[in-house]
Length: 162
Length: 456
Image 1 (tube, rainbow over the protein chains, first blue to last red):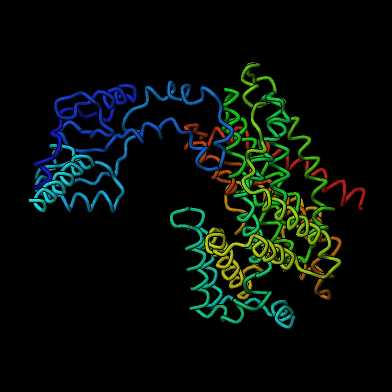
Image 2 (tube, rainbow over the protein chains, first blue to last red):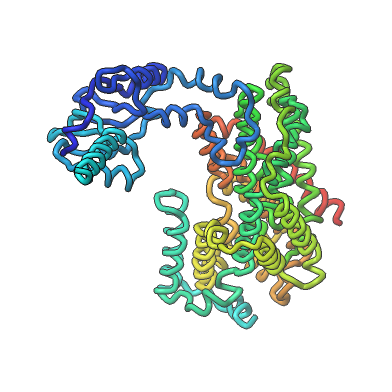
């Protein structure tokens, strides 16, 4: 099986100048298969469909996290309503300012083991799949590969019993 | 000491060695100022060239006080960094900062003043960069909580850290370097510089009252956010806090007494670092030692050798003759010129290479003035002392002039930008330059009154 066989074809994607408000809402309602159940990360594409970055739920969390908290241990001194008020302030920020730019991609014909290799080595949860012209054609999520593994395990067990 | 007398009596020969050393020195300083390559790399490479071209031999560079690395400065810096690295994770500094904000009862201007005083006091004992790294995040948190503009707090943090650092021997690297070269003690600095800095701080607070006093306003319900913070939650390791405070107490007592006990300041600091490492019971000293600001340390090592090279070939002596020519040996004029020139020079270039060059220059000048004296009698000649203090005041306070005047400035501006609050070069200078000029005027008056009018 190859990356293209199990990837989620690209329906929903973001543009770099989309607002975070729009992006967060799309993350919440993006299609996975036939249902609109939301995804944890979406590709950010340029005009030609080439990948510019990925915006994940974690990036949205980082967008409201003040940089000063990460420098010193000040988590104990935050207040009720702080998160909501910062969220309102960053709602109109552009996706380009928050997205992860350094994106690992795989090709349509890459093996699933190569995909796992990237995911584990770089500690990433989703990989854009690109064609020969570097155009994004799909997304490969952790759970897509997980289901292939589950299937293989169950098949083997059935075989042993038989 | 034989080398010292040799250097004085030798006539100036502008030979190949002279021009080679001068070229290395000028090029290295030019690249450091341009910031094209990291200053530590330039300093180390320049030092290597001084050795390769046999301007200094390795023995001179590594072991001679006259030309080589000032190990007193190096070990004082490393030791203080180790002590602070061990103290930071305990949460003691966050505790102090939150406690200070609460002391201000959530009143924005009161907090600004208290933070300025706390920053200055911390800076007097820790290096300025460490101080601002500790204070800036709390400043941003408090400004967010009170929903006030953080810019005044950030700018004040920079200004107060540079002012406070001037107060003691260990507050700012120029002072450490001057103390080591002129064999001045911690108490000399307390006696001569701390009072000046207290006066400067009073004027500084008056200035920020005029600038920001009426602008900072908040609402009553937001003050509650500050008052509800419990500073005790900052303490992550109460046992280590106690150990740190005991060791810090010993170190400061050691600094106070080092002149009487005949220990160098580096010995005191090294003892503190060793003791706190031992008490911390850490099995893995790797990260504590690795967190020492090695680029800064190597910057110093390289600079000392480069400057040693130009001292040996006579460039510094030649420069000192030019200075004497201008001032005609009038030491009042010299000390005023040194203070004001140092302030503007330090506002533009790093004060560390500047002071590394000025130190031997002042010593050479003293040798021309009093050729029959040597050692402490020469270095601490009563007429020379105001020049040392002027150098320290000018070089440290000058850092406030521009956004690149001192490392602390660069750090705070960087942190502010990361937090989405850009402080442009001009925006900083609008506050920094007048404040710098004010502080140097106050220092000028103090030096003039104390050493040339009242004479005590």
